[in-house]
Length: 107
Image 1 (cartoon, helix red, strand yellow):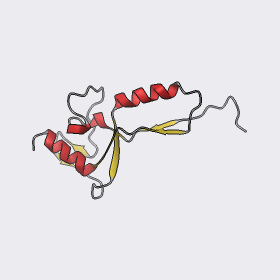
Image 2: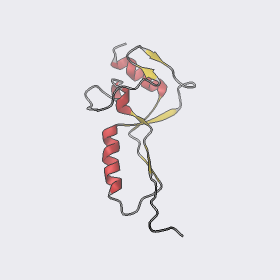
Image 3: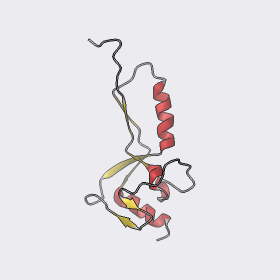
Image 4: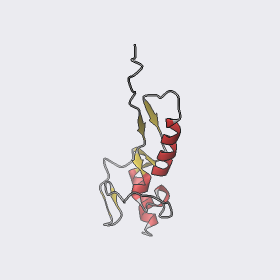
């Protein structure tokens, strides 16, 4: 039996934040507003390098932080919360992200 005063911890799973990949073409066009700094984890657009895990052909999920904020705001209005929620804005492989980044830079 659950204690009525017990709080439930809820996770909202997002995958990678797409606006941290700027300016990687369809994944985060430079025209998209963001408050995040570019994150250098897999594809480094500044130094034209990439460290793609594995073969790079496994799907990865991406969500813009503004979409995450809208989703979280809606979840807060729910009368009952699930343990876990998922939000997926886009799916791509790291090879596709790299290709989009190269196209976005004109290479």
